[in-house]
Image 1 (cartoon, one colour):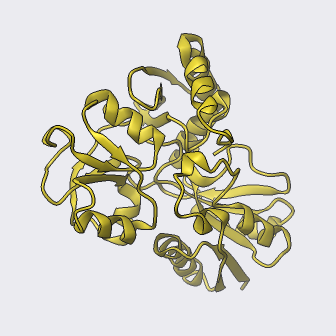
Image 2 (cartoon, helix red, strand yellow; image 1 turned 90 degrees about the horizontal axis):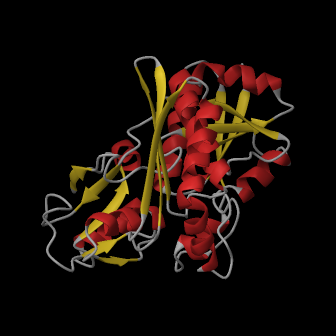
Length: 311
């Protein structure tokens, strides 16, 4: 049996993910080691992600370890991976997807609608901020960085009336005590690839590809490929106000997507059905650009000294 080395960030959630795959591979008789790698995104904790503008800020150092052969595979949250995977690498598996939606967490309030006028909400995501402002322009949005525990601790300490987080991370860690509302995609369209995990390998490593084939989920592969095709068409990343949510309905792919101004004053939404994930993603992206998405994105990029790249 094979001896495999997994490269992972050191956050609690990243290590949960790495250990989860380690257990699955152990069950098949393989020896597995986990190497913790600190990324640029882990080192920059006092600046909103949208203002950093570093391509692959949560993946670059892990990819370097993979390229150098220090690790055999890397586990990523798919939404952190650039839509164009670097030359020499490939995504060997996209595993069964967790709930891709965002959740509303609060000590006092049961939903976004119940928040009082001027409530303080924590999020550093322009996508979440824009959609919150679209339905509740009175809310005060404040930056929120750190791992899941840090964010929840700040909420518990009363620094925020509520915070918005990804359902997937909280579900995986079993930290759902403060979840008050799973926000529908109609109110808050998720980030492309949210809830999905990707296993990246070197493209010239067919042996590892074969060992990981059992982890690839057909539905997760199709839906996330569609979402990432849209993101690629719009030229945006996970830190710009773009949302994409694909699901299978009656045997067809259905894609909902949004582009919005960060202040929520303009929000474009497009939905289409199709059978080819890439064509559908590109078609919806093109429709959003034609309807004014290009102007919104140009405005967003102009707000920052360094335009955030994919993603």
